[in-house]
Length: 189
Image 1 (cartoon, helix red, strand yellow):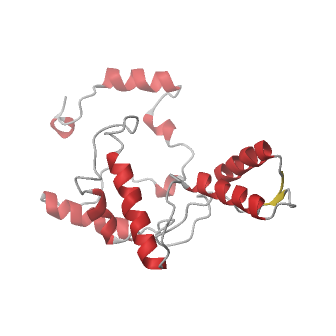
Image 2: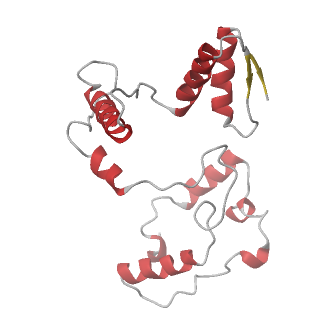
């Protein structure tokens, strides 16, 4: 193995075996769908040698030239999951010992982090709204949405039809359709 590739653990035989497995004759064939003018020919034009910090800075500067979907421009490929900001307090909260556990949530003592989070959330919502009680028993958006639809059906007793926007996340739609069907409600979009 030549010194330029001393950090790569695979040899030519390994590379040929992998290419054969995926059904291509060469590495160049993997990139054949890309326009030739965007491919770098030869070695990267990097002045060097560079220290680790200099090389990271160089690649960060290169990366900053890209426009990133979700960061720089809106992307509608998220099926309902779009750009959002996470408050700084979230990192602090999820690292608290009474919330952070290493277990799966199938045993009472293991669920303590989840239960503590629900208690904290309900307490804060109650304080913010001035209401004596608050509910936080929904673990994710689809279940909470479906519960809201069921609650609306209970309040508006004579109405048995649910009208949903087509813009609702497909997973939420499936959950609402399933729950509504079980409740005897008709769902339309």
